[in-house]
Amino acid sequence: LRKAAERTVDGLWNAIGRIIDLFTPAECRNYFAAAGYDAT
Image (cartoon, rainbow, N blue to C red; front, side, top):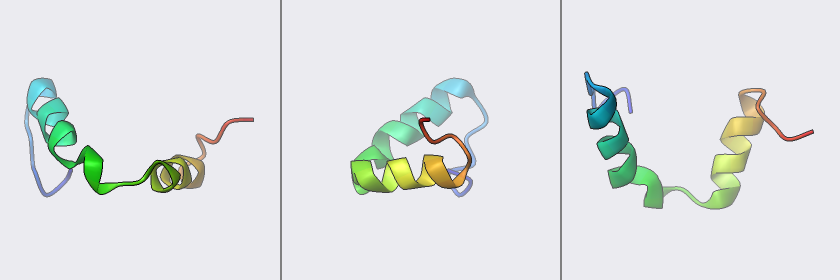
């Protein structure tokens, strides 16, 4: 997302929509857990 360098919220959501399929659900869970957002 940093590389996309979007400057608006809409642009950010569009960038997320373009790349979301690059990640598996397990990868997403791991990223959130590593950031401290894991479910407890």
